[in-house]
Length: 277
Ligand SMILES: O=C(O)CCC(=O)C(=O)O
Ligand SMILES: [Fe+2]
Image (cartoon, rainbow, N blue to C red):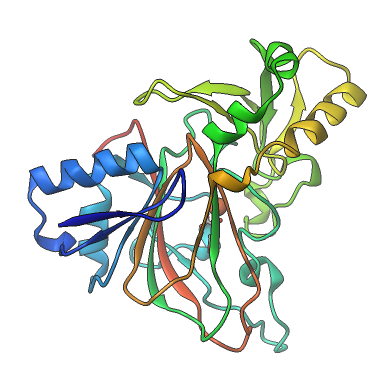
């Protein structure tokens, strides 16, 4: 097994393994690379759904996503990305086509126990476009001026699924009301002990302890620090790639730019720190 670094701070690629037959020592090396480099790519895998679930469960507890309409019919823990893009009238469903492309985000900030990780497996890739972009939250935190770091000391944000825009198109009508949950804006990673700017402009509704104007201004200000050039990695997909990212220390977004008539299909799981096996 070889581990190859991809970006200057995040991203690593694993060669020479089959995740279906991976022993514990090799898995431990992948997990370590994932903590160190936040985004890990395993190339060239041929998986059935059960294989993908079994491998995903080695990282934590696989948990169904709140978007029920995009769940796999037989496996609710699996979300299928990129299917049913066209409605009965032939119109492109932008919520499906541009899923994850509206802005830089972290998955599950609307949950009291946010997703530790998200893992995707590529079943079909378009001939051009359709990349996923990643960025380090550690780099974002480190880039904050010290006055801003002080202002954020002890601050918590309130988050919901749809955030200030109430973007809930992928949810069933009865699932669209959310009670905000609270997370510290500066988050200490539970496994690495490093500080990260834990922030999601699309899901945050306000920063607690300031009035609305001040909160919106601070949200805009923080948005400007999220992406640091040295902290980025851009993934161009190949069929058979597995990519896992750490939502506790990285942001991501889909490029959302591939030819819509082509297929771009992934299985996707959300992985939590806590749960029942
Ligand atoms: O399709 C992608 O590239 C990523 C979409 C996304 O944001 C997610 O699956 O959480
Ligand atoms: Fe996402």
